[in-house]
Amino acid sequence: MSTRLIDLVENLPRNRVVLLGDFMMDRYLYGNAERLSPEAPVPVLHFQNEEYRLGGAGNVAGGLAALNADVRVVGVMGDDEMSHKLTEHLRDCGCDTTGLVCCSGRPTTTKMRLVGSAQHRHPQQMLRLDFEQSSALSRADEDKLIASFTTAIAGASVVCIEDYNKGVVTERVCQEVIRIAKARGLPVLIDPANIPDYSKYTGATCIKLNRIETHKATGIRPSTPETCEAAAKVLIARLGLEAAIITMDKDGAYLGLYEGDTFVGEQLRTRARQVYDVTGAGDMVLAMLAVARAAGATWHEAVMLANVAGGLEVEKFGAIPIKPHEIVQELMSEAHEGLGKRRTLEQLLPELARHRGAGRRIVFTNGCFDLIHLGHVKYFRFAKAQGDLLVVGVNTDASIQRLKGSKRPIVNEDDRTEVLQELESIDYLVLFGEDTPINLIQAVRPDVLVKGADYAKTAVVGWDFVEAYGGKVALAPLIDGRSTSNVISRILDAYGGQK
Image 1: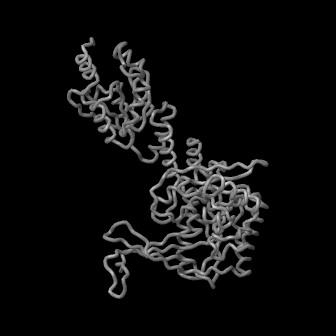
Image 2: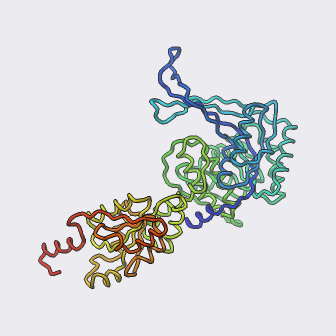
Image 3: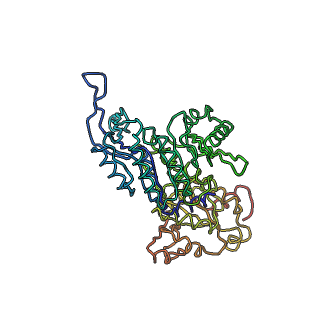
């Protein structure tokens, strides 16, 4: 499954996504909290700098654009300075903003945050000031918005609605958008507002909501797979959906849908995260769902990818769009944890290509590694320090017997690789049965080829091949008295055996 997911992300097509919702600007004022005010017991910030970021549906737009989507945004903005910031930032990330409608009686929704640092340590949000008008759009403005959407939908593959309950996604707008999209055979994905009545979303394809929203909409607390199933069935039946997705924070997400008359539900787990800021995680989940489905992913695959994207988002401060290469690296890391370090050459090469594409330097070394000792450990540490990833070629039992005689190896190849997997310095292990590793070196094309300093450089197999394309050879220092032959001799001496 991981390979399929990686292929999906690496080949995301540039599908058009129309995004309707509440577009906002996030304004951050940063400062150092150096003292308390003499006027009141509150911190005083010494201003350092300010930053503007997209907020609300703008987070989804940025996430979609980062995932290679052709994004057309449909929403409202005020006739004010922040409207220029909004359109500027949307255009900077590649979005078409012709679908934004100017409503002179409303401000561009803006959230201003004061962010303080104590003694220049990690910044923390201290206060937020909102500039907004959340009353429902007038009928005239609804007409403008629906007309704007009708124009924007040409050539689209999927429609997203990001509702923050700021008065833009009214019942009339929502129902018209769903009707128009469905008439053209387009799926509609909803990230709903935290409201008790979801009837305005009736007829959509999928709804993605969190635990709190689920409880408010259904009266069911989604704390177990059973309660998630009950809530998903209620949502699907009540709104006429194809699928319901309940995000479960550290527990991943629950996917519920019907295959014919059979309900299929599953909880898709995610890996543990160091949570720094949950801002924008749900928005990134919606973006990944939309892009994945437009690319042909199944619901299961789309939710798996959304889990990864949302998980990466919570590790960042603020809403920072997640890029495909970050998702690929995370999927590769998860695959590495699940598969271990041993690979066939056919499995290894695509993974190395992805690492190399991300700018990682590949180091290669090889050997029998029969009885692991301190010399080996220090050797691998040296090798890993020459680059970013260490690939170790390990001789098969048959090749060792040809090279060292019928009494070797002492430890068989499966046991040897199992022990080597526990060494932190090693990233990948691959067995080879030839008398030399030249074919393996030519396939891996390492940036650095490592061998022990008991070899002259020109005696290292593959040195000329590696240097011909700009790679280098590094000779690892030897540790006196540490070798497999010495270990075997000492064992024989201690127990009176014959070599």
